[in-house]
Image (cartoon, rainbow, N blue to C red):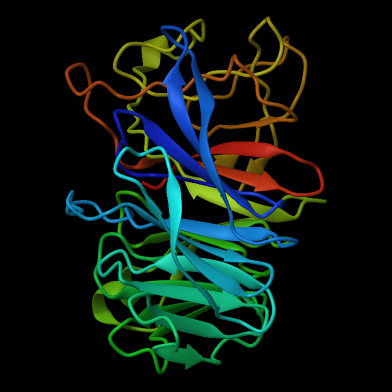
Length: 362
């Protein structure tokens, strides 16, 4: 699932690729002053007896031309790609083009955010391909550089010409899209790289969901700025008995709480953004084992458990969505945003757990 990065008809839109082969669109609507709900808007069936495996919006880059039509590229379990376009009213999807891209499952499809007529795809045939959607009958390039199925691709929304790809071969490759013969950086990780997400503010930070290998945050500054084969793993954390399939950054801007206010957890403070609490009605917070890179996990416990120290990063782990989990955006009129504080979320397959993490990159 992915959010469209611009409002449509005054509402945020969420697109979901479903196991029944549908691409579903949902509107985020305010139901109460502090509550929201997802309202089904429309759906489109990619193919019969197939699974929708991935999707990407054409709106990934900031400063996008508002005259461009809103498009979605999607892939399915039959190896096909589908280019969809949202109607002018924002309530209907129609198919612009569909073509056979891979011999087996097309695990991933993604736009070049800087040139949205170009899309990329990765398949279980271990091939990475580029396509011009205006003439999709033949690929622009085909790369066999990955050793196993290609399952994650994302164009860098901050720096033109940078593409990240990941594979079951446990490697992240960084490419210059002007020359796709060889990647300019190769980052070995632990676990198949199922999802990749560039940071919404920091152009050099890349988040990777690595299945049984947990998740990693990669500093690609030397690679992206100087085209050197040099990347640093800032954080690498494995979740026991979990298969991590999803990871993404929050776009919320956070502020630090003044020290004298840290003891009060009754409500988020004006001008501050924090992960508050989840679980029982008593509103307790629960400490967890420390993780590398100033990460800490919060798991279910009693409300008598002490709150986390203010110097530790926080995450929330819950078996189900809790309405008591609150995140508040920093108000620039009240406090200055701290871009060293980052929120990210991960989700795992077997245990059905969503984790929210706070990472202090300073």
